[in-house]
Image 1 (tube, rainbow, N blue to C red):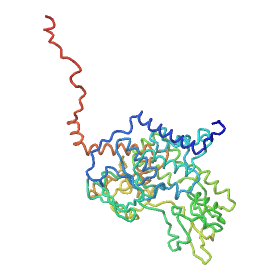
Image 2 (cartoon, one colour; image 1 turned 90 degrees about the vertical axis):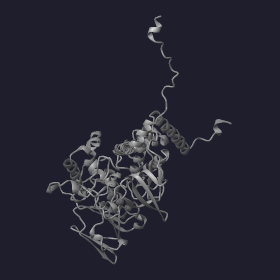
Image 3 (tube, rainbow, N blue to C red; image 1 turned 135 degrees about the horizontal axis):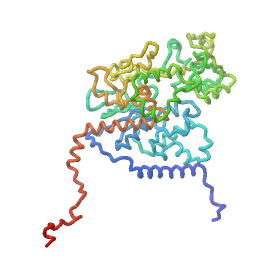
Image 4 (spheres, rainbow, N blue to C red; image 1 turned 90 degrees about the horizontal axis):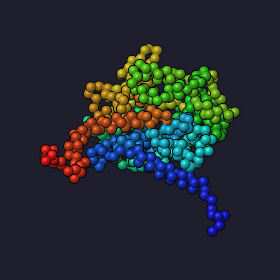
Length: 491
């Protein structure tokens, strides 16, 4: 066979070969590091009993599961989404690229071959990496799917949590709805890795309370953008999400988008970026409550600007209008659509999108009914000065170093300490190590180490007996000969 008759390798085949080599490297890296640790927890007698259950299999849940695996602990992850649609990346997230710089290592837990960069270069090469600006959103989603697959994490999809039972001080009982059936599981530890809308949901302003749902949607919802072609759209908000939905509507052919921004201008600086360093990640929890509140309240007051690229994605359209000093006063329904009333005048549109973020409301989610009025919040723990009040921050849970809930009352269930909040509301207590790409490995590692130590402490009698009955001999007795007494050797 001549060389000219050999078919050249395709880019798809090259990517497959590159990933296969990378996966072999991951296996080798873990072997060189003697990881993961051997399983050491006592075997559970009940098939429905788990040591650790993680609710949510997005980035935070996966990172927590891998961090526990490195500690020798297997966790089971339950997610309400279908397979490959965990987290927001392939559903409600609408940015073109991630906000974070491409070099951040994310959930790799200090394993170089497990980073996004390693995954990307294995398929597309170093030159492609060097020319890449920021990570495309759907490629990040593909990377997380690969991460789950290559680590063989136990993810069980289509499981919607419907309830927590905290009556047993030794375990948490969980109820799930799965394909029309009710399933019950118990766990010694539960990690809630449920994202931005944990213990609440989309913040819905009162001005749409009487507006028929056909005229509006929250950015968190699935929106038929194709149906907005040729229609007038208003977007409430000036955040990154507001830019994403505005651009998506414009790219789908909307006749125009009116951005209604209550501020007189955009903030210019993202203060959260100034907080990123190892000392902040490691030392934040030990800051006094006054300082934690001071930092969070200031950032919340100044607010975060939308990203440069996301804003340009909107402003390049001539039919996008940035309306400042335009808070929505009321929305009026008319026969031809709706009219949004602002201090700048009336804005007639066909559809309204609310990019108004999330609100924590402990009463909003029936699956977390057991936590209502039992969880200690920042409002219970800290009273800021009159000029530093923030009702939303005050509703955040006041967590321990292990991300566990604290009891609000002396008679609150002791099993609250078995539930760990590895979700956005942990930010005030534990810092920027939850749900954010820069600090997720630090947060997952801290969480796993605490849980590992706590489970060891609970099982201390088991481990003591294991030591007492350990019978693997170091010496067999044939490694030496007893010496003849010294006095006899002199004769």
